[in-house]
Image 1 (cartoon, rainbow, N blue to C red):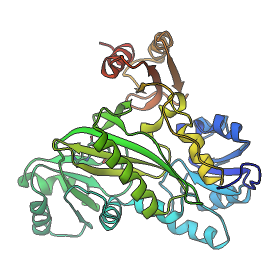
Image 2 (image 1 turned 135 degrees about the vertical axis):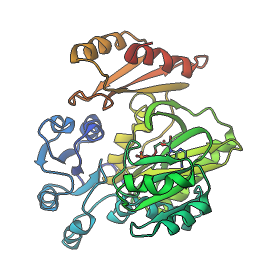
Image 3 (image 1 turned 120 degrees about the vertical axis):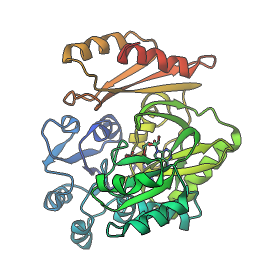
Image 4 (image 1 turned 180 degrees about the vertical axis):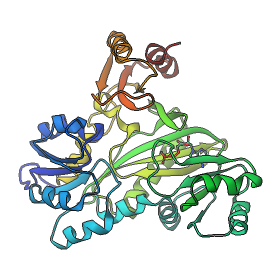
Length: 386
Ligand code: ADP
């Protein structure tokens, strides 16, 4: 195991300067690490906590070369990088954690699915299109999945953007037209009873730390609330942990990954997608876990021993605060009201207010007899209105 004292990594580069990088700030300070952040705008949240900043888009390779010159290792809060462009930095010895092969994999949802299949991890039925197939081929591939199905852009999708349900064969061609016939993934529409997620970290020494499985609930395909631990059987929880361990071993991950899954009516677990970085479903760890996901990522990429992952309270709920169709004053009034809630911690990312944008989140620690569903509903009534 790595020794905390004999550590040579002091400066960590972070590609992306949104709220995920911002929330690394206190952990970096605790571990004595300096964060150097590559992000496009001076107003991006993580600029405030960074030791220094390279102001440039995430996929700007020359900027990442400048970042590398200031860092011992580079990690990510955003995966939309220029993979080919960064090869020249690897050739010159820059260390990326996780490795760029992991990033490449998640950049294309088809490659993710194929990797899961090779690793023996459970996928829904799926197929894919490259973009130049005739309608007959589209129809044939869709037929192997059945209707309704989900059509997703393979690249650059987030928060459900680029994900559409196709109800019947006659809608296929028009739907793909609306995607401008870009490469897409076709998947069965999973009739899930719950969506689950799990965070897991792995170090270069092969140490693995798995967090408890959580429940996530999406509204309009955007994560609205998370309950930890998930209200699932011990069997489901243990299979989730198994998936987490298998995945990080298969990836040879150095870093942390969020795994989003569907739980079917018959308790089958199917993977939806992974994100090789900290994840919205792990924000609760800041206030309700022995080691936050942000500290864990920094520990993993800087060769420090991983921290324990148990909850520090019986259960907890996290609610995302999305931008409202209201003025700034209304947002601030509602934030004041949220501050009155007991055992709750509020995070406000100080981003520009836009309806539907993730602007902050709140975590409430709960006792053993509390109902997390009711607690989330009470928080949401304050923020979103009754
Ligand atoms: P993104 O990559 O943009 O975050 P996802 O693929 O995770 O989008 O989809 C967002 C949400 O859409 C999921 O959390 C889930 O609620 C729903 N969804 C996505 N794929 C499926 C599917 N195959 N079956 C059922 N629901 C799905």
